[in-house]
Structures are given as structure tokens and as C-alpha cells.
Image (cartoon, rainbow, N blue to C red; front, side, top):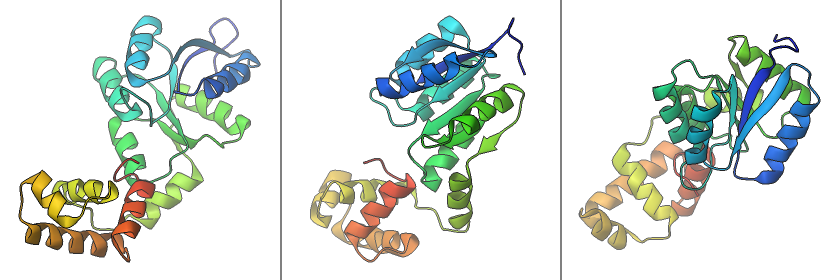
Length: 210
């Protein structure tokens, strides 16, 4: 743990000012922590990181202009020793894996108890990794699922936007028969009853964004 003379320097990244304000208030009450910067999207996060070089970054995932995963990849590409905690409302297994593969040291939900968040900040600063019980459960539940191919993800994204097969075929420059085959595969792999159900599962698991 850091001492009062060298507090853990924290960067808070979230597109909601109320969340950043909550983090600021929480950190202000800790003698071993100091909030050194805030950002409301991924691009700002990279700029703020370069400017402040924080010890620990709290990173939201869904943000305008640049999302949290892309920001993490950019920051870790430039500063490989960066310690980033994902703090999000999303618990889809695909989203979690994407964040962990990008280099997140911890994955917590925003409804996490304050004490747990503070302990995670201290733990990550000390070199440990943490994943919330909800996130662990999601990863375990889908560990043996067959992943959608990139082509199937593209089709699922267009399904979620409300496009019929004919329109999907036109947009992707493939035949309608190919689309029908991919839709069958998507329903089978996701265990979905129909197209709408598949789209809902895709969004919930983080395969596609809403």
C-alpha cells in the first residue's frame, strides 16, 4: 500500500460525470489515494494518461468517440506497465474476454461496493488481478460455447438493426442463401429461439453493441 507521501495516483474514465464525481468523492476520503485526472471518452483517456501517467486507471467500456477497450489497447501499446481496472455496467462474457485480452488487470461492475473497489485499486496497484464474481460466472457459463465467426457477427449486427435477409445480403454483397445459412448457424450457436432473441443475446453477451 502507498503511504501518504506517495498516494496511488488515479485516472477516472467514464462518459457520465456523476460516475466520475462519485469516484472523486470516494478517492478523496482515502489518505493513500489521489485522483489526478478525469476523461469522458477513450480519446481523452489517452491524452490524460500521457499527461498524468497515473498508477491506476478506472476505465468504462461503452463511451462515445472511442470505447474503453480501444483506449486500453492504445494506452498499453504506449505504456505496457499501465494498470487498468474496467469499471462497467456490462457483464457479457465476450465483452469481458475482450477487456482481459486487451490487458485489463481487473473487471468490476459499477454496483460494486465501495470497499471492494478501494481494495481492488490497492490490489491492482500492488500487482494483483481481480475479476468480479458476476464476471467470473459469465465466463464459466459460456466457456465451452462455439464462437461466432466474424462473418456471423456482421450478420447478427445487421439482424439487430432490423434488416431482413434480403437487405443483409445486399449490404454484405453475398447471396440470400448464404445469409440464411449464417442465420441458422447464429441461432444454433447462441441457443436462440428466433432472430430477435439472437440479437438480444448478442447484445447481452457483448458480441455486438446496442
